[in-house]
Length: 315
Image 1 (cartoon, rainbow, N blue to C red):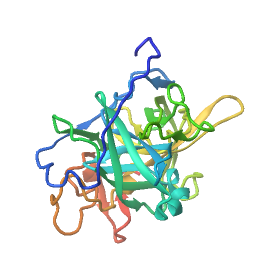
Image 2 (image 1 turned 90 degrees about the horizontal axis):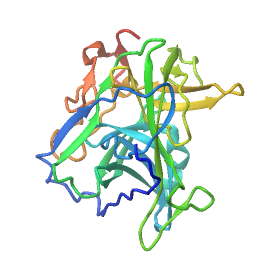
Image 3 (image 1 turned 90 degrees about the vertical axis):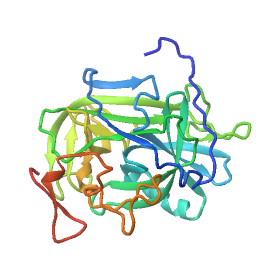
Image 4 (image 1 turned 30 degrees about the horizontal axis):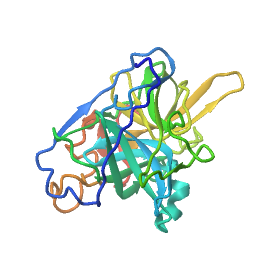
């Protein structure tokens, strides 16, 4: 980690959605894993590009482009396919539909900023997970390399070490109005980000419908989390993404806990890899059957009679 507090400025020139259609047949897609090597606790990650484009920030800007905010995090789970927590954008849905706000997803890669716009939303009923098809609007990387998370269907054991990762807005180098709104400056949208990882342990399995304040199948951890990290990935002890951060709280005694929604609940979603045009013809595949999605434990999942419901061995 750098010893100085000198700002690192990431920038990108963005264009219209659809600018790269037909140009991405030769992209390189690599699954990455991240195993926690920090001690238990909350840690700032000084290199915003550390996760190589797997972890993204979710922000919103006015359609006239006068200001933007940073509201949550997300994780790339397939080529142009992102997972996040529904509650990150749920309350803003009406304003998005009225074109009062637009969502922007961004991540630092190398010395550049990679920017995506959402194309289609899929909310997973009965959970806090949403899958978003996104389209690249910044420049293509010269090496055509895109990385994504390696997912898992396994339920992490009680006592297993896990890691949460996410972004939050930062005023360290970019001033915000009321600590929330980053104003447009010299014709450019600007925003400040800080990256964090939180290392801790699984403390409880919540497998019943009413076992947690968060809907669906979740696990409770003793990881501390900050506002803005919601929607970010939870990595198991092998470095695979097993879930999405849905809630966090701090108790009066100083202890913390976070609730993670298991990503396997989203595997029935049908999502098109938006930046490989024409790869699939007809109906888009489920994340479960999409071989462009790296999934450990795929053989443990089966489709039940309900097409939106999965049966997972070991849960």
